[in-house]
Length: 461
Image 1 (cartoon, rainbow, N blue to C red):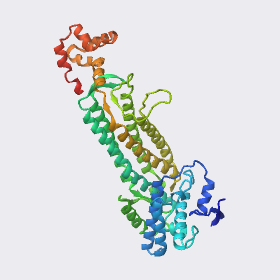
Image 2: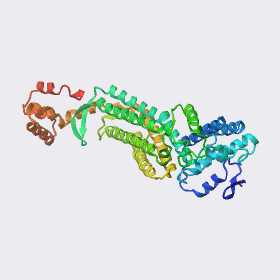
Image 3: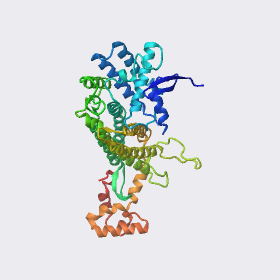
């Protein structure tokens, strides 16, 4: 049977699990918001711990917090940063729109652990108080958007950009490997003129390269932090030097040059940086979806599809059809892209939820933005390592497709004229012959002339 202790808040007494570090306000939120079972990601919780740690150190430096309390808060906050107290962050994403419940969850967990460090008793409000000490100089209204920016930028820098760079390198390598593998190009899903497989993969690599540039471009917006604005942006109840000093520590800890928002009213009332970031993520998702779909089409078959490339065989593809192998990694990428695009819609709606001096859809924005970054990071890495790196060219099929393509008639047009080339293409289509065969049978051109005309086809010119 679970044991409880009694904790107090402004509304009265609350039963809290005896082994919990959190207190009354967290427990009320647990009971008030049983919505989805979704929790904030660990990156967000770590960012909260970092903010609380830096705040305690600065408040001590400013003479607002004793060394004893600051050290205990700092030690407890560091445990949050390290993920050692993650099980104490128990609140649903769908909660009060400012994220106050999760900010108080952090305040109470850190206070509860700090009190245990100092007294041996877990929880409570003495000697460390969750509001008076852990939350000193702060408000949920500036802490939550700050944690969002810190978590998002850190995840982008540490996970997403390296993953995209890895994928770009993989695609560039395939572009080099397949530089002289001629194949048929396609527009409108119909045969077009020849290209090389290397040119196709080079196009994919450039898409990813541009995606990286777009992601890098949003970092400047995420570097601005709302910390210091407290309730509405005026900085009420915080020391005038608090924000600059705390943000300097956050920058030192993360290795990112964060800075105080130039206008705290914008930083708390609007979340345009989140919308901008999500837009860049959505664009990357669309690029990855295009690449993944091309890859699975090019590998379709193996005998009755295009079959121009071969994908690594990772697992059996069917519970009923023996020998079937599916393009599972491209399918993962396409699904992740769809989720990220859906998240962008939710984030956009969330950003519209800024009324007067506060956005009140912050938990929704944070959950979806950080999920998009995490999903893209994981899927991109898988795409590179478990798909792209193992692709080989089916050179024979590529050559056969070129020879059988009616698009070779395009090479005839400058010599014979458009109408005559069209007639040859139609005859080839109706007879099932190749363009070369029709031309030679009609003695329109000699074999030597055709060889000269088609000599650069394998290079995709």
